[in-house]
Image 1 (tube, rainbow over the protein chains, first blue to last red):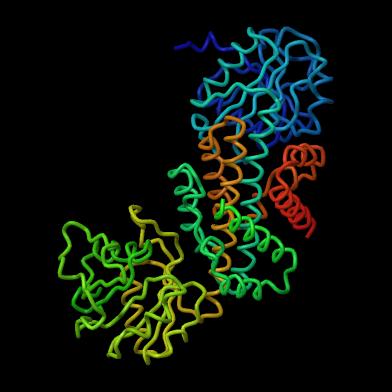
Image 2 (cartoon, chains in turn red, cyan; image 1 turned 30 degrees about the vertical axis):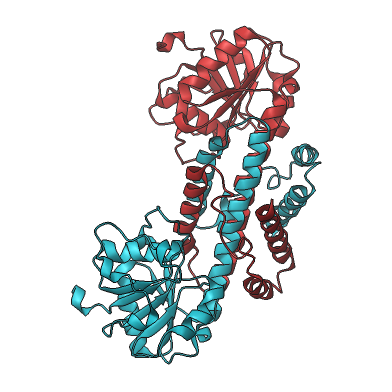
Length: 262
Length: 262
């Protein structure tokens, strides 16, 4: 067990959902934080009991004891902000699922700290369950970053940028695309004066079952799976005026039918 | 509050996931059941403490006190089995999301009892949360079926076959298609020696957030949403050898991009 004083102090950059999610995780466990900076200073919501001295107005105010700098900013801002961080003894990390570690090439000690979760201001992340993917360019920095990652989460994965991109792709396909299917379903429900919330127990059970069984092909049900062409035709008829959704329906139905046969 | 003796006794047909889900819900609350029949008798798993006399070998053994017959069988079997049920004083119901009530046309008193949930043998359904869609052809039967539905669930919806089909379509799009996206994600994770279970907290939070906010367009994130063309290109490159999934990726990405603008 490490004491707090063994932990590498962190300086945080960013004011978005992810930055606030990381800040709340660190502050909740009294992790040593040396400062917090964002381009738009006023967007940082510091918890009430936090020391307001943490807020820094410039990247030239990074305290010397800082060992890790976390760039919790959007992918498109990483390179530019990385260039604005003065050279120092610290490890500079971005938090992107898809960006290569070498985008931080202006720093010798570079790393990646990618938590596989969706963050929102005002929603408290359950950090110890969130898989954290880390990457560094040398063994000493690996040890340093692992101390941070394992303080927050029980699930720490070390992997290369190429592999992390595949985890990110899986996350986009399963979570972002599912969210869109939920949006389309909500519209159908609302158009028919049905309550969107009525789908909630079904979706919760779908996720539970797929992960409990460990293989979603074992939990697939529905008209495509049982090749119920009559129901599929009824559904397509109902989607006649929604060409885009009809195409998504046809493609995913075909995919389930093919999967069934393999 | 109704006493058990006010409840319309049920006779159950079927031996699949749904039939077992209904049986376990009814037996758990000691609901009056007059019998249980299935074409393949041996596939019925009667709970240990249940009376084995409940199992009937023929549809000519339907006890006279039966008030509701539940056809918990696959859509394609409904019409044929309905034809085998001798005429009687009971209400005959199917449990399909998509079949019209009039498929039971050989019975005067016909109904629909459609629970919006995915059922599996061995998984106990949380009945009081499952939305149950009912439909009947007359007011007296409506009262009878409502007594059954409201005994099981807090959420009972009366609607016509046409509206029920839309709820079923929404369920297919959100749950069956999501399950397929989970399958595709699992394959990518496994191909890269990553643990599929690492996606679980993300998916659970995605579902929670979409329903907590009540509108998934508010919880959409990811490269399509922020029009991050570089990441989208990286993902498409990673999917180069998987033409079908690449097409799904492109279509859903386009759909999210369009949604963003509306």
